Amino acid sequence: MTKGGMESVEVFTSEGKGRGLKAQKEFLPGDVIFAEPAYAAVVFDSLTHVICHTCFKRQERLHRCGQCKFAYYCDRTCQRAAWLNHKNECSAIKRHGKAPTENIRLAARIMWKMEREGSGLSEGCLVSIDDLQNHVENFGEEEKKDLRVDVESFLEFWPPQSQQFGMQYISHIFGVINCNAFTLSDQRGLQAVGVGIFPNLCQANHDCWPNCTVIFNNGNHEAVRSMFHTQMRIELRALSKISPGDELTVSYVDFLNVSEERREQLKKQYYFDCTCEHCKKQIKDDLMLAVKEGENKPSAETVKEVIQFSKDTLEKINKARLEGVYHEVVKLCRDCLKKQEPVLGDTNLYLLRILSIASEVLSYLQMFEEAADYAKRMVDGYMKIYHPNNAQLGMAVMRAGVTHWHAGLIEAGHGMICKAYAILLITHGPSHPITKDLEVMRVQTEMELRMFQQNEFMYYKMREAALKNQKIQVMPEPSNETAPSLFHKKE
Image (cartoon, rainbow, N blue to C red; front, side):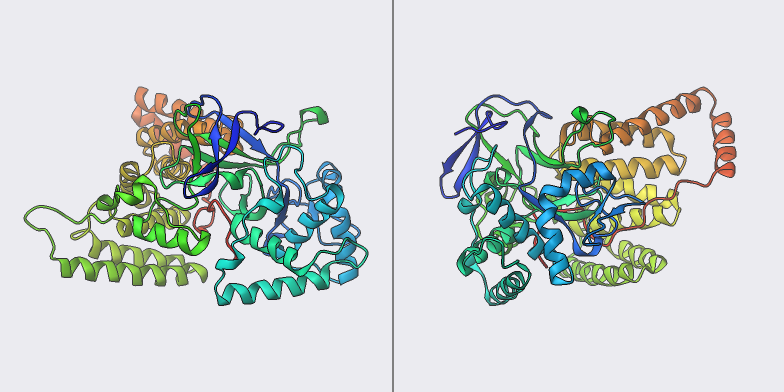
């Protein structure tokens, strides 16, 4: 079964997993298997005034819709592109007096599209919205309560002149959003900014060690001639060699958790038991639970105490980060590392989590040398755990490279930036804004490295002069969120 732009994949019934996607031809690492525009997408409630509602890019100055005063756009190009999807929403917001929550807005956009096009197969879709799983029958009491609230709010917002849908169907749409909505990130890929529905992507089953990755591309409306504009879309990209007939899989959760915790998370959020090879054989669990070996091997009791101390510290760190007290975060990290270092192995999950936070916050505070030391240890650990072409590994190596560069450790910095560039070429592709940024850094650090190798003394003199004359580039403020996860779950 193939459809416009989807010739290279087919939907099949996967044993024990329902529907799945299968490759129709061979793919190599970095190949785009398919690109899919959103069926419907909305910006998160908290960011509606700082993110463009068409391309989901973060911009300094946005144009506001003069009618509803709610939607914001980069420019007239984005505003015109949005009108088909915003038209009904615009008048409904004016009638309602205010914009409803993101879940209601997304459900409404889906149903207005159905009103326009019918609920059958849309162009380029392998499945219709009606055929997507809603898992409403698996909802717990709390989820059922949230569903009732969403349905009531939706009915208040939905205009009387629009096509009317039954309660059961509205519940189906909210169920679909609950377990199929995909997280959209800003153009730098660092912050989750919205949520969308991509029916074809929903057909890809989960594997903790997948052969594909999903990247959100905000598109490009900057070209003078509109024929060169590209639309916002997700891209399913190959991470390893894929043969015709192979199932295409993506990971719904971060691999940096032991198999039991990943399985719990998948069961709770997506209502299935993971039976992938890595979960069944608990592959890499030993690395993530590693403790110091040799004659000073700690007792099981000591390990238990340090893990508990690490969990408590992570809670305190979250609180301090929310309050923006970054010096307190650094102190908590240093104290925790003192306890962890004699007990936990270099690839232990809890050690890596603290190293990651410490390096990010210290970079923000411009304490680059200490940050670089922690970042190096974090990257060494990640390399042993993650798939070599994992997007989160690539982003972590990039951050570590930039930290080393800022610390004046040009050789290590350039090496890491090259490594990150090689990963991101596969996961994001050469035209993604992050990869382009990285290419600029790669060229710059290569030039500096040559200068360093020719005359170390002159390199440091010039670096010192450059830093005096210009404010050092400030690292982005540490986010309290983890990297955007693949699928969006309402908290």
